[in-house]
Image 1 (cartoon, rainbow, N blue to C red):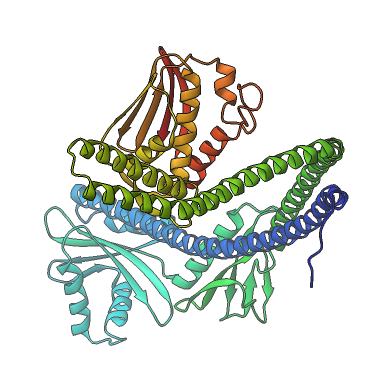
Image 2 (cartoon, rainbow, N blue to C red; image 1 turned 180 degrees about the vertical axis):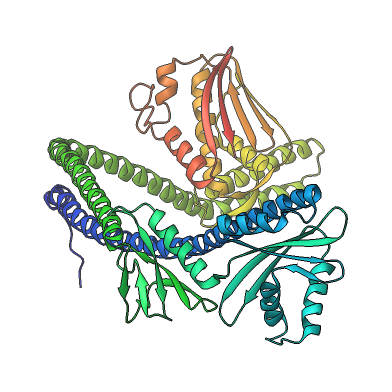
Length: 554
């Protein structure tokens, strides 16, 4: 199945219509992704807010219970200080009047301050408050009334020493009574002051009720506290109304702490209006973000669409320009192909010349051998010494002719494979083929250098350079200096320097400065192609003070 070949008009349509369509699809996808991402972030933030509120409510409830109990302890501490003041007052009265007027002061303080007193001496004889001591005896010894337990009770109190604060708790009735005892300065009496018996449960409940009432209440508050008395089955502030209601059950989603000792549940409830307001704020926040994101997407899409339209217009103009220039480009390519074709024809001619020279060499070889045999025969039959020199000269000429035929045959025979060869030897072979007059001296310097390449093509390139050097010198006396230095070959001739314009064009095909049919403009072009393409090197020419230098880098 053959692949579709796209025309320029097809490419123009693709570049014109595909970008806007792609941009439209990308915009729609971006809007959908933005919507779902924003919705996911909104739900995540609401969930995180709810979790944070639950965590804060737990902490708020714990702090609230801790603060309330601190207030209860502070109330008890203040009551303890009042008892201490009363005892110190009685100690002052005793130190002044001894027993005179002490009882009247006791009765006055009890009626005024709601404080009860107990006084007994160091021999454990009760002076005042025997009923109160008996109540303490029953509390300590589980309601035992024997006298020895009374003495033990007084002994326990006196053993606490001076300035002792005590609290008497009844876990069955859930009551508490505070006391403070101190000795008189003479050590004769123990004076103690007792608070009235309070219900510890009622004291705790009252403190929680007062703390709820003193809490600021307004509709947008995020939470409120409540109390559930499961002994009496009623609740306070269960619906944020600061009143007692009959409660049958509580919301299990609320956070609460169970004060089993007082049969109370202290809880905290989120204000639905406040929570709903926070949710609504988050929803509005992400709605604004979504609108802004979509606006940015459409703004970018509009900008890109504008750029795409301008680009499409530019593409159309460029295609029109390319279409107008296409004929000239095709014409130039045809000319280049014709040049390459001529070069191939020239190379084929050289190859055919090599084959022809090989045939001539084959036909010439036998007569040369016959001449050589004849000369040997004449030498063997003529014994004159003067003939030896003529024989030697004839022999040298015959060998030179034979070697020349081999050089021409090998030179015009194209190399098929890359193989190592001696650069210096290849240059010598090119020199031997070159026909130079006596006015030109060729000097070759440098060591033997072996590289991997095509020997015959390289010899052709060197011969082309030497031929141009010979023509540049002409009939004047001149030199051609060849120097080999580590893959760098310089060929300098003493001809006239060339203009820069000629130097820039001398390696172009069919460029020649020779008049008539003396030059084809192929030689140096072939040289550059051989050095750069076949040998993988570089060649350039430059003017020197006394001629032109060709530099080859391999």
